[in-house]
Image 1 (cartoon, helix red, strand yellow):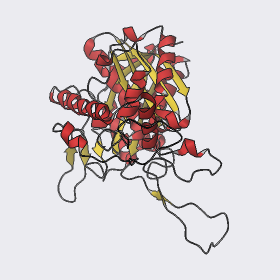
Image 2 (cartoon, one colour; image 1 turned 30 degrees about the vertical axis):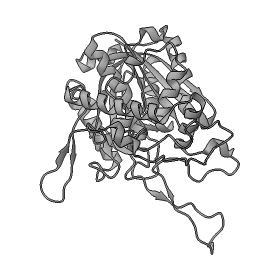
Image 3 (cartoon, one colour; image 1 turned 45 degrees about the vertical axis):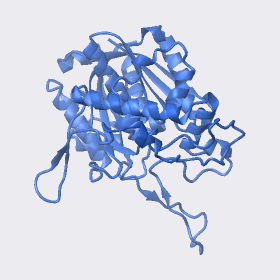
Image 4 (tube, one colour; image 1 turned 180 degrees about the vertical axis):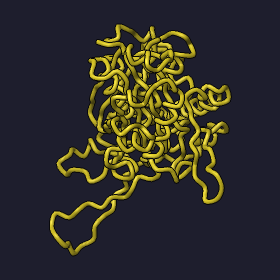
Length: 413
């Protein structure tokens, strides 16, 4: 098997829902990251790229018709460079990185671009077709921004609870309190704000020119959801988003305090963004004229009951570390996507040997944001840049995935 190198990784700053990137199409966001990635590797002939892999969780709007191919064309790559879009929901970007790395490892390619994109702001409403012509009744529009829609009636209803209710179930299972979740969320904002202040995102984040009605485009330069002024007092004032004090689901034991614990403050927001990585083998690396950030050494995937989807990274990481011949004691950084504070804390409860001091040292999705199809690629790139700054080490990028899956990637330097 060929060694797979991460030569470089870039991402856009992450925009809030209906925020700074609201006017930018997702295919343009993805194309921007590809252009910026290649601009940083001027020795590489773009025609040498053998495939472009992009993750996308939606696919119902402007990123339709295979956004990877569209982004490659919009980025100005030669028409000979193909592209493929993959979907593993929240881990689509990481799945794209893994599929590209796998092609390089087995010798099917020497150089590939992999990443992901999502504009949750621009995700459209969809109207299902009737199964009979000219129906007389009303029909329903579905938002494709997030979560279940047009659910198969044969699906077990326990499996199709809202994602936030699943986080509540994890909080129940591991007796995770509202206070613990708020404290974790506050720490995420503080770490992200500190990392930004220290310039730790500078190597990976590339400004996006946002068109204006008049004048030149305005560069969007900073992650929009980070709250340096976040406080426990402000978080405590937020109402639970998915449960009231009287609700109990699926026979789950209630927390001692009763009521819901998952709020807008201790969950990831809705976001827009894109990320891209340049991957090569040894031969392809020579064509770039660059030193790699890291190498990919192992992957892991696992599935669980859909209503406990947030716990699936536990075994995915265990499997990836075992394949790499590593243990938690070897880790210098673990980037676990913060879909919900309860979900992350639930995973930590099932990793008693893990040192949480290496978890998300630059903050996570609660602060930075979670543009679904892009997040996995962002995490992989963030780990690679952290290892490059250290000069050596081992890191893991991992995400939970709606409908009960987890995906993990081990990187080393």
